[in-house]
Length: 463
Ligand SMILES: Cc1cc2nc3c(=O)[nH]c(=O)nc-3n(C[C@H](O)[C@H](O)[C@H](O)COP(=O)(O)OP(=O)(O)OC[C@H]3O[C@@H](n4cnc5c(N)ncnc54)[C@H](O)[C@@H]3O)c2cc1C
Image (cartoon, rainbow, N blue to C red):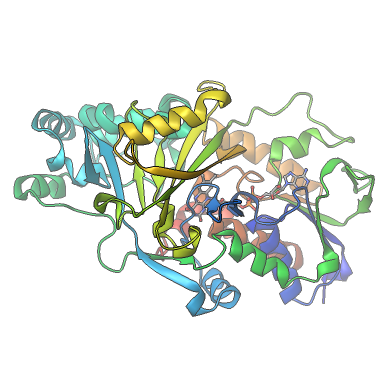
């Protein structure tokens, strides 16, 4: 069955690498091996249980899907009774109040002066006029689409916080469905009627594993693969693209005909002994620090149904906080406990002092009223993901296309969140499908739509 029985080696057992292995298995191809540097599977979508019985994700993961294949896979991996379903309630905390997300449709909740500035900016901005994506930065796009008021009050401070780089360093192409473009008429109607306009609306639900956090999905997938093909705790440290040999840190060597790599593409390129780039290709990324707080008691009424909240202001270090106990009752040790999980970005332009982070985060939780001084903290959990967000920096596509083409000529498919560095197609569903589509391209020559046509994929219904 396998194309002349070629050997395929996969690097990384995150969603992308596991998706590739799964597709090979499904197609009856048994000439493959999967190597993972961590002692566990799931990559950035893994989950961790702490000693106090709390479960944590690397930032609350929400299951999105643009693909029937992915939906079927999720149903197979976890039976219907193994999921909890939620309404997707997202909020913004600013000006000492919660405002439904997205802000642009709910500016009526802002103090009157801020609201009027946002409205004035919207009326002056070029809105729906055509926009030159090729020459523009994300900041240009924000000003073009939202105007000065919304830019100043939310879009610029929030995006600086989440990306850890100023929006003028980011490209505008990735935006697609990821940022809701305002409809001025709708905003005016909402503001005049004093109406909330929530993105989560009817039927806007998501599912979360009842047990084991998001990582349970990837454990279930790994468990279905032939055990002898999955090598955890084995890191690739060098390779020879001419001889097609891989060198692992434990001394193992492995030949391949095709390589599917999901490790960061810049690291992969630098590890090639035969044709290394002269200097490290200047891909830009940011790290994320997760701060989990487990508490005794029940969440306050204001947090009882909230999923996650965005934080554009400076009285706290996080860009987002998830009420993780709301995702599954099993994310906490039992009744009478609840948990919060904050995410703090980090980059060379936005350094984080690791020694102070936990205290600053706890103070941030208090400053924003998420926890009170007399709340009983049972546990804290921190995790740093050194590469967490593939920054869509200005000039990314030219750099990326050059190196992905170079690798493809060497029979190497660099795919996944950091393998292909495309934030717009870097969620779990996209990552799995990049792995699946890479395999199908190797075997059948079919196009890799997720990588090549992110806009098309993201225009499909979101589930
Ligand atoms: C804070 C945060 C929140 C997120 N929220 C969501 C969400 O709500 N919904 C959603 O769908 N997605 C979300 N994501 C994205 C999700 O985590 C990714 O889509 C997914 O993990 C990408 O899978 P991947 O396999 O491409 O990459 P990764 O998960 O990064 O996996 C790559 C794997 O390669 C391994 N590796 C690296 N180098 C080597 C080496 N030298 N040798 C061997 N192995 C190596 C790594 O250890 C890792 O396991 C979020 C991500 C972050 C950081």
